[in-house]
Length: 101
Image (cartoon, rainbow, N blue to C red; front, side, top):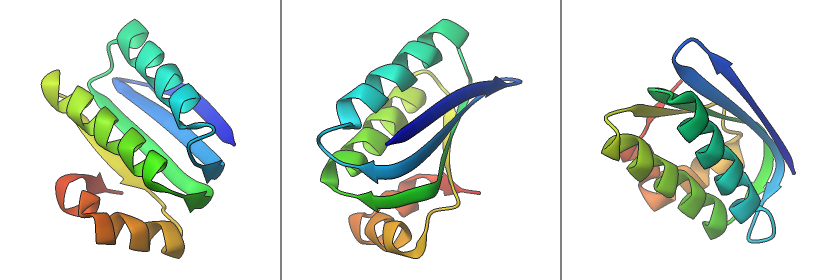
């Protein structure tokens, strides 16, 4: 699992890689939430370009960050999902809620 977080202007950019499952989702969530609170970012961009596998824990991670950003009046975008991850996002309905880059 890879999780790199950087700030660019008012956006927090999270680059994820590897597998996102129940074993790492909680750690990723806490890292993102900590940085969102510290930097008070108005938008969150989650780069999924290097994610090879994601299960329901990954979907929960994304939905939780969507709700957190919505509650603070911010936005969330998902970037570069691979076809298998994109299919999961489509089937779950997340793509209808969250913008894509």
